[in-house]
Amino acid sequence: MYKLTDHVDIEIIAGQQLSAIPRVLIYDVEILLTASNSIKEIEHEILTTNGSDKGWLFTENNDTFRFNADDHLLTSVYFGYSELEKEPHHKLDLVTNAKKIVGIPKLIYPLSFDLEPFEYRYCVPSGNILLGYGDIFLNSQNQCTELQITENISLLFNENNLYCAWLIKHPEQFLADKIAPVEKYQVTPLLKKSFWEVFQFINQEKISLMEKEDIPTFHELLSLYKSIHHSLEKHDKLEILTDKLFDFADNFYSQEQMQHFK
Image 1: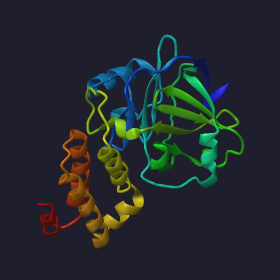
Image 2: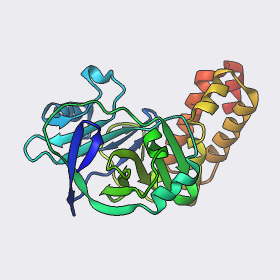
Image 3: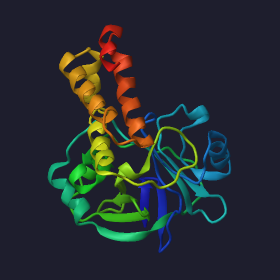
Image 4: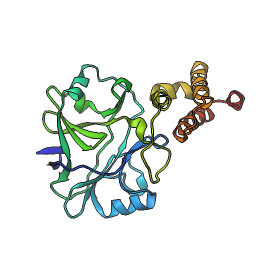
């Protein structure tokens, strides 16, 4: 028996996977894995399924796992990814050496529950992985189980079969700026490099510096913006990244400093 929380039991239905294409929302700090393509469709999905959600009007800070009301199989997932970057050190071996299963969870009992987002995230550009995890993962001692629910997204369970982390492989393939229909696109070396570099600004350390109008951080941000914006390569996903950098600068720095972006 596996568990999403101490009080939520699931079983693993091996061989099945979700067919939706993931979306990494860079403004909402969230990863969506759902067939829904609008807020209206998401609201309908939540009303007609069971599981965890963000509560009335999306006001609660929960991750969303929705299960089919008839067969209780997982239908969609919405992860919030933390802005707190923390290296799990030797615990990465638990990811590398995890026992792998292809399948999806089935809710044993149809119920509503809360599922808090994990406290930390870790970018592993060399391994093409974005990892979300909590203290449960850090306290794991033995081999984890990796449940691959779609080609690029997996859930991790510790030695007690308790959900302790998630990972998305090659997140630069799924960049989005809104909830809308999505298709796969070609990832160029520049886009991949830029994705990981911009992601380093979406963390608490950098945000704290920008809130203090730290000038060295501003110049880092500006330099990255210009290197992407003035490249010869044109790609709408690159525009999402430069728009995010501009948005950071506009939120935290003076209009005088913003003149450098022109």
